[in-house]
Length: 208
Length: 208
DNA sequence: GTGGTTTTGGACCGGCAAGTCCAATCTCTG
DNA sequence: CAGAGATTGGACTTGCCGGTCCAAAACCAC
Image (cartoon, rainbow over all chains, first blue to last red; front, side):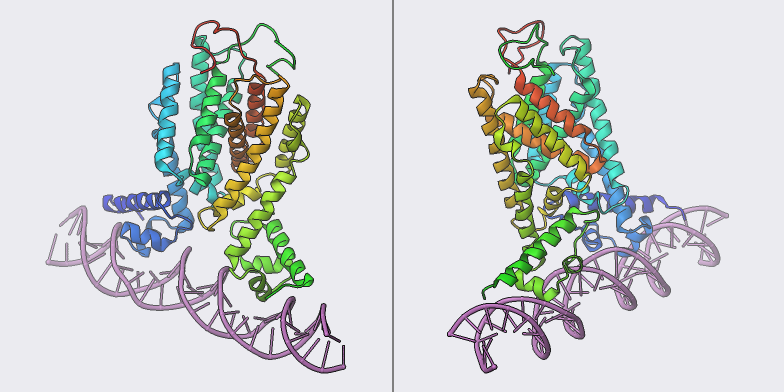
């Protein structure tokens, strides 16, 4: 069973349509009939190109959206080598999510983590790749002496990942990006902290 | 239509059972038959005590779990007035989520945000209350001079909320609490930063 | 244009799960 | 203990949705 060009085009149309639907105003539960309606296709076609049925399709969509998420942050994400770049990235990220509002493609995927086998895998991979970009950025700043060398790069990058995930999550619930913004501000601010000569004032030293 | 003591007990049993089921190993989709099985009740009873059906029940469970989430962090959360308290809270939080693993009651709720009308409201309220506890904690530390006064309390508390949400989210996907831990460490570390006399070294001043 | 292959359309099936209904039973009050 | 009202059990209805199937149409190579 091989696909011709036409077949592959149809297949892609289905993925696009499903992805768009999930990203749109009312995902909740996506039925195959929804997909059919959106993509102007039929059950026959869906099952032809996604033999595993709904689950199969959802997984493809997950992969597809994973790509998108990272792509949309470029070129900033790949070039976090100056404070200006970090700022540009922050701004782009916030703008993107603000525009997106409550709908989150990744969020919709996360919802299926329990349901669709393999989707946890996909998301984990995405987060991993995302984190690596950030790690590179921080390392680059360290090399330039812009970030102190005793900062744990991996940990800090992990915090960014967590922050973004959490921020988006809060956004999904409240519809506000303020929390996401707060988090990014604080993390970047923290990134800019210099080491200190000695512990000042009362309390314990600042660096654990 | 009034409920007797017996009736209320049944009602509560249904909520407890449903909550426990959602928290247990295989939520995915909870059907009313699942609830029936777990709580030893019948459809008749479920509809008697939750006239709105499934949605109605889920909302009650959401409220119930909201309470739990905060309760489980007490007494620490209510008394964040020393570094020891913050540490105890952090430890309790991590232990709690580690024990819980991939299952997240709040997460299950979040999944329904799109589906169940009113659940966004419930979660928003929860986050708000949670944040207030943290704000009080930070303010208390400021009063004691343990935290610098130019720190934006609300913003910082928001970051904690975001961090926890994100950490739990990552936990749900990866099964690891490391990200959550990184985030909490960094935020608390940041909380401990003292203001600095002047901008040192190259780069811009640390405080934006 | 002919035959083989791919693509498409859509009728159909089967099961599951939400929700309805009512008769039987229990419980509380006077 | 009588009777009203609350509670319970579970059969039944309904509609949706994933999945199957196959025949018609389109496409392609020779």
